[in-house]
Image 1: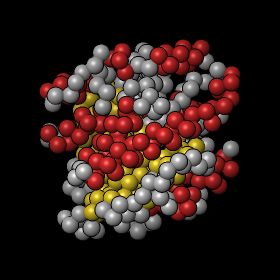
Image 2: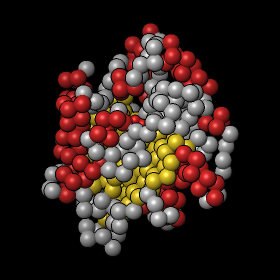
Image 3: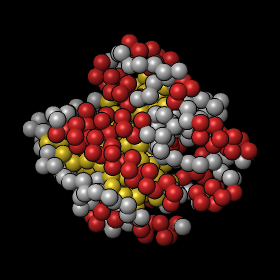
Length: 345
Ligand code: GLY
């Protein structure tokens, strides 16, 4: 089942497998009606690619990368091709991946000439003694690992040139408002640029090596926010902010206002709460409410714990995500998605 909450748009049932739990998101913001279908289709394709990968023997990290590859390829989303442009009119990509048994993690930021930053993040994790590479060093490393460089212009969707021009015409507004202001109004007036969303995945794979019987994985990928300063890095590649996985806590992937998610260490906060005994849905909801209360920030989060419990919630008007059949009922009420939408909008 894939859907945008609270507007359900499932076209097909996506089922649990016995050995895999999986959620995929395609961003949280005020997704206008004309983009719902593209978002639902995109996250569903990513979900199906991940399940297919798993059924063909893929590891938990393979599953995460399979889903992120699809989303980075799809210009519907703010990741890979079609990402927002920075203040200089360039694409700069960030991504992070993590696995929860050994707490290995890899991240990259400021990637300008590769389509799949999440793959490079995985290589940082698996092929270096480091956890985070940025800019030219990350790009050199990617080339040494055999990733195919592209002319930076190839990552720019022509649509983004128009978005960029509108952002300048609107007086270069701060990206914080993009996650909460009504898209319909902005599309009509041209006051704010079109938006799109960060992408992410959380997965749990049965494992005899983990005390709980599951090993957790998370991955998040983004082009950041429109008109961001050159060199700006948000929550996404920061381990413990936009991406986190700990078998003793939770796997988390965030989307939304990156500066806020960074400042409250969203991923680590949720995982630590789960480790202390808070149900994963409550931990997600509490973090979103804290972001709202303390920093007036809006976001969406998917998470799962090491017993395979899934959670997804958001304080933006909509969030695009795909999960297994039967996930809608447990997700919508306990985490209060509809209520939050009504209160805030
Ligand atoms: N959450 C995406 C970003 O702020 O870069």
